[in-house]
Every structure is written in structure tokens, then in C-alpha cells.
Amino acid sequence: MYKKRANIIFIAILALSVIIALLVLKIIPIKENLVADAVLIYVFLCIVAVFSLYKFIDILQNKKPKEEVKIIYKSFEKQKAGEDIIERKTSDKIQKYTENITSGIDNLDSHEKVSELLLQNFAKSFNIVQGIVYILNKESNHFEVSNTYAVYQTETYQSFQEGEGITGQVAKNRKFLYIDNVPENYITVLSGLGQGSPKFLAFLPIVSNNKTIAIIEISTFEPLPNPTEQIINSITEKLTIIFEKFV
Image (cartoon, rainbow, N blue to C red; front, side):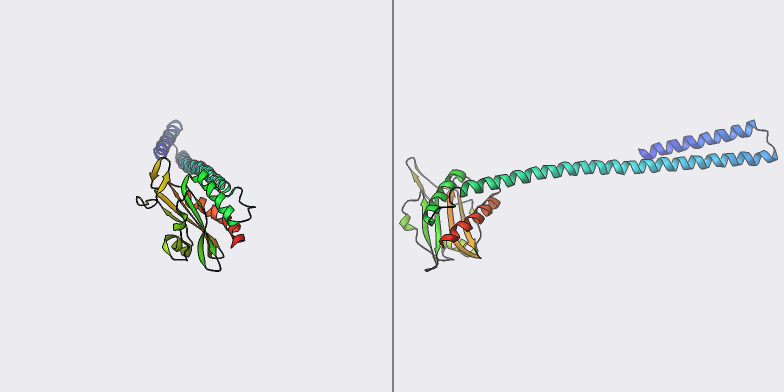
């Protein structure tokens, strides 16, 4: 579009210069000494026409990139602002869950009390239907039950070492494990309304100095909130400081 306009203006200027040159030649008597002057005037007008075209194209070419850069910059600013808002909301969400889960456990004097309140907080925030906390016994090097939530027949939960069963493997790997396709009847939840099978199972290792010192196992009917891993990492980071006092 800009090139087409530039060509039209160039042709117009060139045509105008030709007309002026012809008028000059027609009005002024053609003599030997005047022919050279007319040619000079014509050449001058052509130079003016070419220079004008050059400046016009230069202005247009310089203007377009600036407009594009301005548009791109504004688009980048909007995108960056949107990313900042999402990041801030995510950070606030993670902090909120961390504070809710760890609320009230800082000054408790035993791991049993910490585990009990911790599981109650998980029930309120994550709607867990069952939960169990294991803590490391350094003397026997076994993980033992610290406390449970809505679990029947707790005597069936035996102590274990690293690598034994799913929970023992989580202790060995020192990584959060989230199972979102728990088989039917793998876990049974009993209540006055009957029984059901949770669909989601999570294992949260509490790691200190590259060693698992406690494990939280929870089950739910609904998926954990997003961003799940970031929330869990924030929670377990704070819980490490709490459980270190009892191991």
C-alpha cells in the first residue's frame, strides 16, 4: 500500500516537472544561450522529484516499523501483566494452603499431637477421607504409625523400612507420589452411610538432610488442588522443620 502511494506521488512529481520544463521552453524564446538554461531547470526539477520520492519512502518505511514495534511492545506488556497476575494468584494460593495445613502445629510437644492436628487440617483443606502419618524411629530404622484419621483397624498398619511396599518405596525415593486411578476396593472407607473407595491417593515424604524422616499418606474422593506439586512442596518444606524436633 505504501509502495503504491509512493509510486503515484513520484509519477505526479515527475509529470509536473516535465510540464514545467515544457512551459519554460515554450515561454522563453529558444536561443542558444537559453536552451542550456532550460535543460538545467529540467534536470533540477527531476532531481527534486527523485529526492522528494526518496524522502517520502524513507519516512513511510521508518514509520511502519515504529508502529509495529509499538504494537508488539504493548502486546508484550499486556501478556507480561497477565502472567504476573497469574503468578501472583498461584503464589497466594500456595501460601494459603500451606498456612491452613500447618496452622497450630508449631508449638505442639509431641509428634502424635502434630500428626493428629495435621491430618485434621488436611481434612479441612483437601477433604481427605482417610489419612495416616508415619515417623522414623532412628533406633530401629523403621517407620511407625504416629497417628491416623478415619482409619479402622489401625493394628493392620505395621511398621516398615525403606523400600518395603509403596510407602517404603516413597521413603526410599524421597519424592511425592500421587495416584489418581486407585483400583476399586484398594482402600475402603466406612461410615454410617455405607462404604466407598477413594479414587486418589497421595504420599508426602518429609525429608531432612537427604533422609526421609516422616511420611504422610492421604486418600480422597476428589483430586488435590492445582498446582498440586507446588502446594505439596511448600507444605512439606515447612513440615520438615516441625518433624526434625521429634526424630
